[in-house]
Length: 225
Ligand code: G5P
Ligand code: MG
Image 1 (cartoon, rainbow, N blue to C red):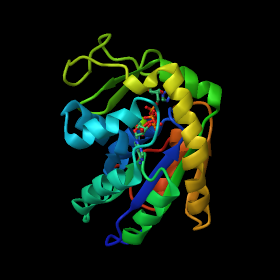
Image 2: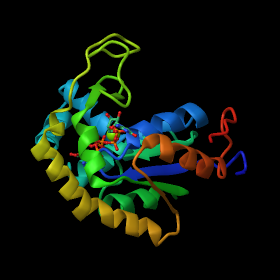
Image 3: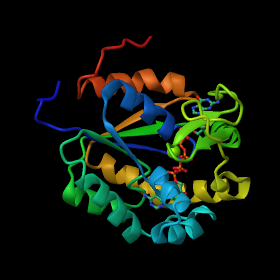
């Protein structure tokens, strides 16, 4: 396993709805890394009605990408505060420009790529409910809240994301194909991409866990069948 002084710099990638948030929360639980989700950060800013949030909302609501300069400022600033932590990026980088800027300041150890079929993704997004302040994610069937419509931890109301409307999801998938897919090739050329394919997060998770356990020590060792 890695020397104690070497910090983990990981990225989780995959199409909208592929389970990045779901798998990330399990990684956080088992490995204690800091999770930075660009989408969660943006949605928090929108809720707080910050200038950045209001500017970003116009893009998010139509399924377009927020401009690179806005994202870079936001994420690199966030990473500055986490220099002594292991971290996992979710939703960033999403363009080759973002990836190039990121690796200028941070070497990346592993890119976890989740490959889930398109039809499966569409069904998932339809059933998703989110607790905006925390980013906790539920699904009407896969991961229902204890009480319908309410967050398990705070009891606050869950919402459906504004960008989960069918038309917007189509636009998001198209932007993923055109702009984000090339980011994978960029990292493949650096030899850091690990691929995970399947229809279910419960099927992908043990594989992701084992791959990570090769590069860092879990908080508590769990063997997944
Ligand atoms: P986000 O927030 O990064 P996306 O589109 O990349 O959004 P999303 O939709 O958050 O990704 P996810 O995190 O990959 O998907 O998936 P998830 O939430 O874990 O799972 C989806 C649903 O399926 C959940 O309800 C979950 O419970 C359920 N589920 C999981 N596993 C299973 C399973 O095995 N079975 C079943 N039945 N269900 C399951 O970005 C949003 C927007 O922000 C902007 C863009 O506008 C973007 O569109 N943005 C950026 N713009 C530019 N640059 C960046 N870097 C940007 N980052 C964000
Ligand atoms: Mg997500």
